[in-house]
Amino acid sequence: MLTEALTTLAAAGGTAVVQAAGTDAWEGVRGRAARLLGRGDAQREHTELERLDQTAAALAAAHPPGALPSPESERLRARHEVTWQARFEVLLEALDGSAQAQAADELLALIRDSGSGPGAGPPPGRIL
Picture 1 (cartoon, helix red, strand yellow):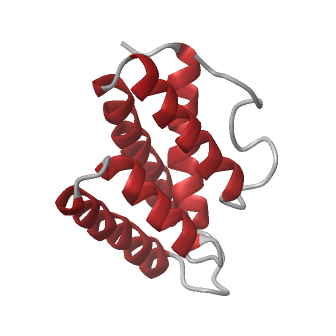
Picture 2 (cartoon, helix red, strand yellow):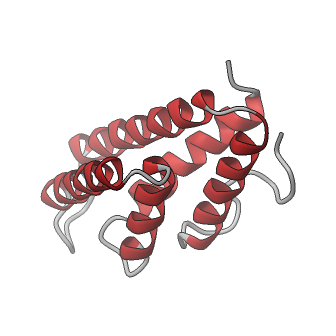
């Protein structure tokens, strides 16, 4: 079971992924998230890239540029945030000790660099 801080971090990661979709930050966030979740396995990383692309495509289709957000598009965004939160939680739960701390640091850096804005992630510093 994850600590509250790690659960919060995973939630912020899910939000960062969804908020970056369709922005200039997307390619960087996409690559970093795939590398983080792939943990050095090229096939897993490729699978994560496909999942990320599916998220971006679904979000773009639900909320075209210039259109006002609809209740349906907001529900879709929320659903994708929860999906990516869960993926980050599974990753963090599967690791322990220094591997978990390293993954948490990488996720925190992804959040900070995502362009999601200040306060999108947990406060700076160690979260374990």
